[in-house]
Length: 432
Image 1 (tube, helix red, strand yellow):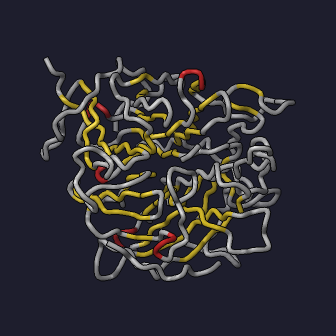
Image 2 (image 1 turned 180 degrees about the horizontal axis):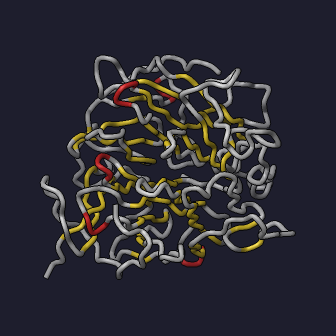
């Protein structure tokens, strides 16, 4: 483990009833911003613009705009601010729908940090999670890729890193750039399939998604068969305890992790993932909604109910979606997706969102929203009583090349794209 170098601060991925069939998809379009007096009821789902990309016509000048991929909008528990994660390595504060000028944290390579998220790629700053006790301990965690500093490890030119930072003692809108401590660094052979979504679960543990390590143009997909190997940290959902330490580590592996007692890596919690770019917990039920980016044919959405997550195997690389990909295939012990989308329909990089549990829009409570970077259509749906699922497009919802969909302050959902735009999902009365 090593302390990160000091970094100067400067101014993709490849409460309601959640067991009912969704109503017909609502219409969508630009509408008025939600009034300060929530709740708001309505029939039409709308994507309300919040932040414009710097390249958009009519955008305000920097720093009031964002230039580049936004991988996440999220918020600490109970905080009124949202935090915007930029792929190239900056975190911005969004307060009252306005960007604070100075970055909360800048770990870009050009400013002395480890993150080199250039352009639209799968390398960069990929995840942010605030400690459940953030209001007291001011700790937050980030997941990013970086160049492997070991010149002898030519098989792994990259590292997938989980690091802890703390907020400045004097300014809640600034992180302490000298506080960065690396907790996990996973050697990675290729630049793609890095996943990187991190979330604290209802149990207080930190969950980390990792891709299978990727592939080169000649190596095939998951050439090292990481996803089905319980001893490998790639192609998994990991689960760790950041408040305790095992010998030689800056974290502990919970003793009820399925491979804690031996026969695999103690951090591994869920197997068989290719590139779980975005996923989330349902804040009311504890269910996990995992969108796993496919290879050539299928995009898949998986749901793991609370109490049925430890040791789950989502199939890759034995299966892509429901299809046998690497024979011989045996479905025994596999968990298959609740929804698959074929690439022939324009889907090629599914983006898992979140079940709406905010307070502003009661008509949305219990609805799961998700999208796809290729198809670009906002989708919605609910689990039926029998746990089946049927997603439906929200009409007119195309926002080209979305990148993430996640809850920010107050549990309100925000969609982002690869250009720097941010929208909030709202409802409005249907226009006559």
